[in-house]
Image (cartoon, rainbow, N blue to C red):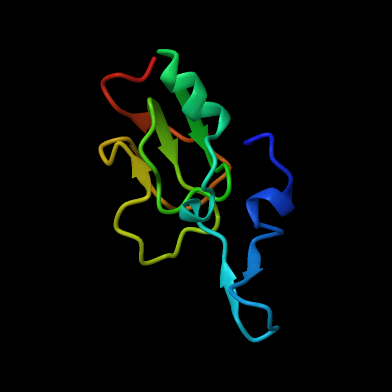
Length: 106
C-alpha cells in the first residue's frame, strides 16, 4: 500500500531473505516497510484510517486512526492493536462479526 514495487520495498512475500542465501529467511513485519503508506499520507492530511488485518500488520505501527494486526501476528503477542485500547473482545476466530471497543470509533 505504498505505490512502490516489491523490488523497491525489498519485500517479495511474507517470507523474505535476510541476506543472499536460502538459509537466511525472515518473516516480513510492519517494520520491514520503510516507505510511507497510503494511511500515513491520509493521516498527514488530517484523515483517519481503520485497518483490520492488512499485512504486514505486526507489530502495529502508530497511525492516525485504528489498526488490528494481521495473521502474521505471533500467538504470544501482548499488543496487536493501535491504540492498545482498541482490541477485539476475543482473539478467537468465529463466524460472528468482530466487535471493537474504543470510545473514538465511529
